[in-house]
Image (tube, rainbow, N blue to C red; front, side):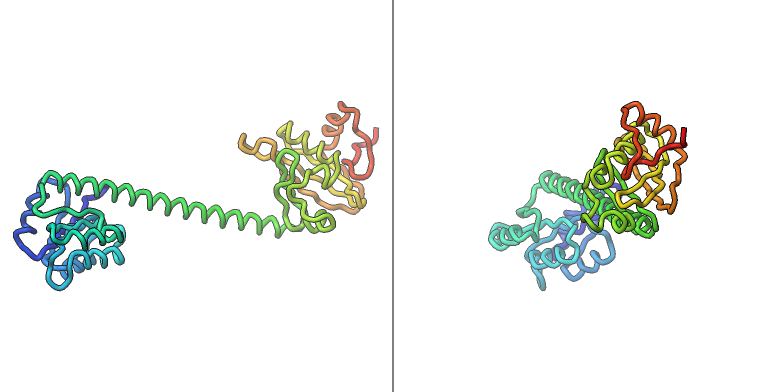
Length: 285
């Protein structure tokens, strides 16, 4: 525990409270005493109590009733009850209902009570750290969710089609891409790039992925519309095989700046032929 633990002892007998204070005097705890449940509630409202040791038989409100209320209002506080044999039945029920963590018989053994308190505080500290970690993880997940939503909204606002590819599969599209290429045959997502567009476009993107260098080239879609394709590999080893493609539509035959290098690479396979649905040819020889 990074801070000093706070312990609250509740008993209507002053000698019991003094005995508990003496027991903990050598321990690194801040000890608070309360002679009744009402006084204990005031202490709980003013101090960050980690653990409560309460007698059961007290006037006004029993220890079981008091700790049941504590569970509702301060659920992270560890609750221990002191009692005699005659009250075992009602206390066992309270333990089963989760109101009480430990039941210690009077008269207690000092060493056992100290060991129990140390164990309880250690468990409480572990639970508190776990809760804090879960809270941080939840906040990070929310930030990531918001960021992903914002990224999608930004890309959807772009008037040009943007497509993300992992290996040969389309894993991301913006709204413009779905409107331009996906409306007739359904969504582009999880389709193979070569099937949704053309084998030649898939091959051209494959050269970008394997060469890990961006490129620009012309592309004519099946309907005859011409585009300037700007393709770049995704950075980092965790995105190996990933690429993003931006398709900018044009009215006339434009030639991409990186086209000559792409055609040279395609020529090595003997497949560099012009035709609809293929990258545009390079400069005339």
